[in-house]
Length: 142
Image (cartoon, rainbow, N blue to C red; front, side, top):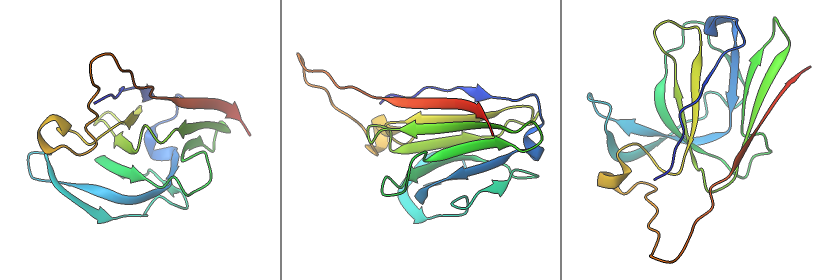
């Protein structure tokens, strides 16, 4: 499984940012934050939403039938937008809001957490072969 764990900040607290992403479902976690193997319908951030008071530590399955970018983080005060353009090799979007709420983790993953045990998105690469995972980010003003 491949994943990277960047945290993003514009200098504005997370509670004053807006998040939008195209998702078909959310990965169900148990009380220890381990995926149960089930996915549930989820589209709460499809139109964009204020992050005021929103706590996330969740994995979402992206909707690749939606228009790119599949995720945007917007700072309406500073007019900054961070857009995420994952390819199909990164079908999972992990979003985490740390307690300090000065940044937000938005992570592209090839599979759900604990994929080595649950198989959700686990990619097996045979000896002598390779796999390419690609995503792009665009930071700009509007």
